[in-house]
Length: 185
Ligand code: ADP
Image (cartoon, rainbow, N blue to C red; front, side, top):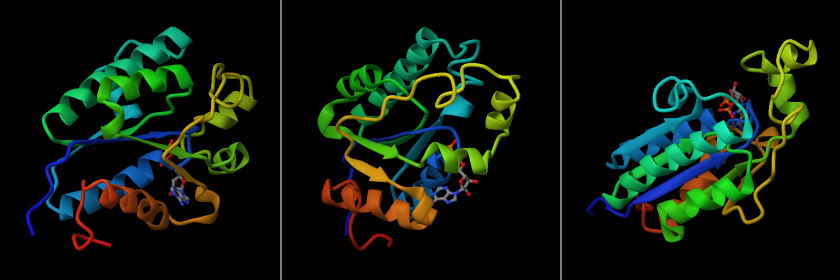
């Protein structure tokens, strides 16, 4: 069977520690094994390169998301697959990203892990720093997170494994012709 060449952007939004990067990594491996060339735009990495110098004000967060969306739109336009793992807390900015990429090629995944679970994981120690008053503007603590109004997929990672969460996204990718059912999983 030939490898599909449909462009697609999987955009993962959610709180810090929700599991975006972890699930994105599983998807990258599966898509690569299925013969697709995949670009991962991880928020933390993007902020050290593409968005170096930007902070966490609303204006800077929006600029960060729109830069990612621009790169994602170019990748999709050329038939590639791009996975974005970024907090991207604002509904209107995510909608702008959807428009830039093209709604038919945009898959919005809400990694809807509850704040309490993210805080218990505290992968980067950010929540502890915020609770100690050493960090301000942390999404979910003293900065807003607007849950997506129309997500394509909602994942509750508190009751699933990263593989199980990736399965739910994989099924949609297959239904959209981005991956073939026989490829993996
Ligand atoms: P984010 O990218 O959203 O900030 P990370 O992927 O960096 O989050 O961290 C999520 C943490 O939660 C990781 O340590 C991961 O191993 C753990 N985890 C536990 N269960 C899951 C799951 N079902 N899906 C994703 N991550 C999970």
